[in-house]
Length: 478
Image (cartoon, rainbow, N blue to C red; front, side, top):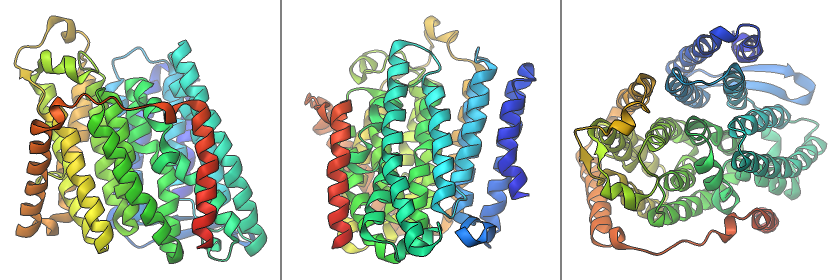
């Protein structure tokens, strides 16, 4: 069943060219099947393994961790397809969406480095084609920038994989324990960059913010997590690497939220926040799947809403009230990612912070306050009951169906961790949000500091790769 489920998106994706009038229906069917499969794996936590090439360690492992990521991919994919339902997207677009969906699912069940390499390369090609889909000069440049950076770091990754095989005669993740230092550094450089972690992820804000709205939702909601998932899997198999990952997780959370607080553009703020939230996913590998689910649903919904606002500038939005139903969607998503009770983000944050040691807990609580500050910028935007005539034709019914799926998923997923509803957890969450809102209203609302974007320039991104590789070598040796 698992092999058939993995093969289905690729078969359907290419079949769309033969049946172009059924493109969205076929895409919808694929993500619904993934939705059922992901739910099954969450509620049936017993893991199972499929050995494809025994002597080479090429295998697939499906467990509850995979289930959470697969469910995230299915719900975000469902939301994006419903959002695009009444648009003029061609069969080519739906083909790439489904191929991307299938390859992302493949990455979430890989248990060896060579299968993961194949999955990540297919993801890069499909994402490249989706980013370049509008065929404007800007979109083509952003797509080329994305695939060049991805292919460069995957060359480093592949060299590390070869070193793992030389040491173990196997490509399995567990072989990282006996692999040389060079292998650890090279593989980590590839995965940290693909996953948007720390300064290796500074390619992410421009890519996610400048892509088309549904593509931004896919990239930020699920695609970027294909680099984080293998790190979580490796941490569970090789505990010795977990301290290194925790350092990067904390640095990522602080770096991303620091930039997000000061950002003046809505889509760039959401993209920078994604960097920060990936730090939360990575800092507690045992519960990273649940946090990834809540973040994927939240970020996809917020990107879809941001793409339908009258402006991307926070300054202009404060002067032009938003239609109330859309503002409510902004508030629900922002409250969830801030850790407000009754939404899945609350349970995810409580569960994650409980797994941390003291020094991590202090840093991550600071990052949580920063998240509340960043999303207060959305919550405190003005609203109005009457929708402007210029916006009425722009927003289709598919948008509201997508919001029902994504925001409804946040409410439903809240049931995965009801044990977090204790008085201390509730009080702590509300205090953190209150501090964040006060900080925004009293200090950051009037802040006019402009952030430098030099590190996001293409040539600087390549230079940062060299610095990160040096840092990883040193950390691995230590």
